[in-house]
Image 1 (spheres, rainbow, N blue to C red):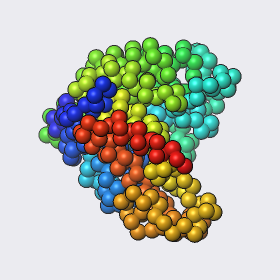
Image 2 (cartoon, one colour):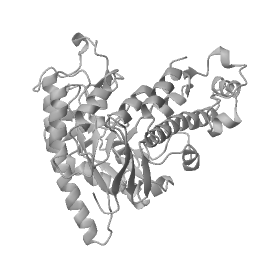
Image 3 (cartoon, one colour):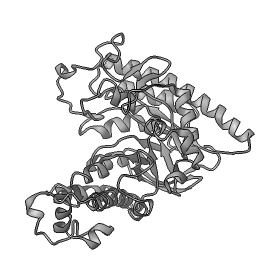
Image 4 (cartoon, rainbow, N blue to C red):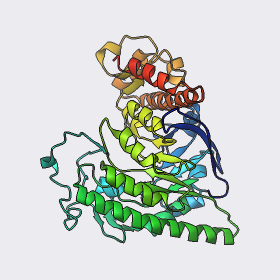
Length: 414
């Protein structure tokens, strides 16, 4: 791995791919498995860095696409890099901007996620490419070709261009500890022919990303800046076993410092796709699952060999009053919570649960008070982070399978 980075496995889950380890970065260690907080625009919405730290967060992931558009990577660079710019002194990551190819392209306006039901009917593919030649439809904000991506800003309609080289250049300027190769994330219900084409394009882009990263890193050392960043290659292939395995062999064969697992999955069967990949990728390098789903998915990801994973769900759902508890998720705006003076979750030790009642949180949301978003986000992030921390301890204690069974049984009670 790059100077300043190392990854050490401390203990494995018996008869599974999962493990507990330590990922060392220039800005601190990450005890894995670990949940990565998403700070899209160099901020975890509604939280100060101090509040974020109180949740147990170890690492923050920011969005290359959005920071490029506003305030611009040069501004972030002049501010000392994404960590210093946002007042966060721990490890940081930036994604490649590749997911925006998906969200502004064929799926624009459809509010689709990376996870699709197995029973999804092909007839619903009304705006997705039916062939390689068709590509991405003309009415979308993005155009993909083999060299890169042209897109219009969703903010003001201005024209922009991303290539693998440009993505890496931007991420070097943003200065995160861990960065990702530029990739194409095809829509989850795109036909297999297109998934194969997108995967092959991702591989070509990965090779170009790796070369530009090496060139920029060497230039940085020549100027005595000695900026050290780890580059992760991204595995794609959609929901198809043969494509996933092919992608893992290709990406795993190059000199990446770690790996990202991206793309789309079948709902309820994400663990299988992750296992296909992690059985092939080097065991000695860290693996990050991009944009994970719900609580059961966390267990599947850990069990099948992922070390870190990010998701916007904790804070996004917090802002709508959807809050996690040990017995399942609740909507705090429901009438039954208006006079419920118990803690949100009796077993939770976060700032919100130790100091406020369900009735007070219900009042804040019903009154549309801004404090509601902060308190809810603190709790949801704490819930995810502590859950994964407890998984880590269960691995070290040799009790992961038992912990998983007991937790998911209790979680399903609501």
